[in-house]
Length: 280
Ligand code: PAF
Image 1: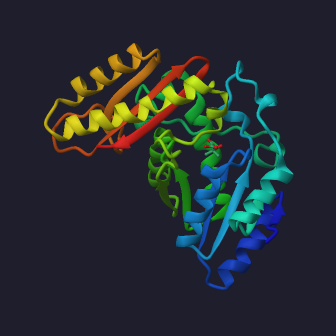
Image 2: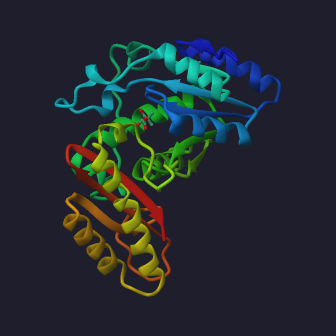
């Protein structure tokens, strides 16, 4: 099925109004394009929970820092439309930057809580304000009942969940488990940058997170379990940005034993930065 493509908020709302009039429930899958199996999995999961799925394609300038090359971000709208059609998306919203941020646009959502957990925010200080601003707009523009986000970007998932709750946006944010290669490595468009040897080593992140989770479940202190995972990864040649146990929702450092925990890691292997996370 070839999905309908709309570029303006007015056209988007004409389509969603028809669905509402028919009593249909719909999901939104926000993306920046460069569609891969992680995105199509979000569409598949959206289709299980809603009658219609909208995928948005928008390379959001507000989440790029000055040194990050917005112009180099991969763009292939025709390829994206084909892949999204195959996955079952009904409608694609692919606006131009001016449609999202018209002249005079002056509002940015300023975040605290999970957005300031000292994880990805430590490396990209303005990133989540930009993400939250565009995602809030996409939520209100689409008026979707549910939104699908990958658990792979775990901090982003918690940030948008908190933002929607705090701003009373009537949408349910659903986290979709990370899609993995057969050896357990989290699927990512960055995996292609790994050399053959690095590709074999890369799964060590997932294995060490699993090992740390196992140890925490058997009573080891989360800080010691993650410290020893960090040491093992460093010994294997990773440059570790963080391996940490956090409260699964607030991402704060756990204060007591019965908090739900998430183990979260980011590490470089050669020139490739890998991220992963698992529940305890
Ligand atoms: O995860 C992404 O691709 C982006 O951060 C998102 C959620 C589409 C917002 O631009």
